Image: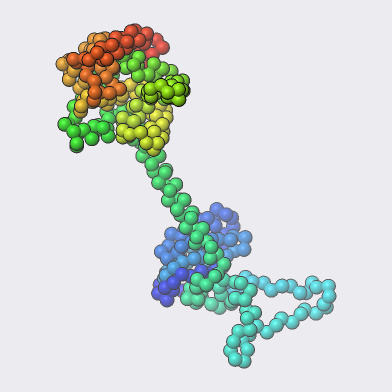
Length: 379
């Protein structure tokens, strides 16, 4: 049984006796070990009948197969007559004597009479004297039992492949979100686009303590009044936006600060259903893994406030020539006013729309209480 069998160049199927498999757990262990060997496509153990069916292609190392199975505490051997018991006629009510068995030996011309083991549908050896080498050499792909198993195994392998990909994507996304929970976001897709195809990027990360409360209140008043009270989605706002669109009104966004943070930090900017689905997923992730204060901190540090201008610190210095910590209520309201379209509107000098919008935001910001109901975003 030693050596690699180069004779088996095609696909083959065989059945071997296996001893020592007492339960399904051991059977699964044996199958896993055997399927890991080169040249083996699949293996199925029937521990109740004490045999194993093996499907392979090309040569395999018999010694390696036997040793691998032995490592699980089991033993392989060729199937023999004792593994295929003949019908018991001794208990028949109609005969006092055992019925003589028909002669299954080859006839005088050396041809099999067709009633041997193979005629009864057995996969492999017809006597215990045959070695594993003989069985490997006699294996073929001519309709042995289990011919459909490779196709089933192939389907399972495809399912397993996609399951592994999905699990890896899930693990990577969770680790990514956990990293951003404590580390500054180094680059976003919009930043990357401006860095490669635009006029460069201006961004300077600062902690929430170094951002004026005026800007925090203005952004909440302008973008997401219920920021401290929802779990990532404002379903009332979504319903109102859909109803207005159905009644012929102008389309308006209903994204929360959490949704915008998820999109800006992890994704790209477009309106595809794939991006929206991923945005919803990452929104749930950050709402679960991050505190609200962290969501606000990340949002204010990666939001776009002009061509290549990202984050509150860069915006304050670009538009008002001061740090974000010193923004007045009016300046903060003007920055909040240009957030929906920073490529069209300017915070200074402000146009008529931005001036009007900033006064509305200032009035609403007075109702944002960072020491009370809205304390989740307090610096």
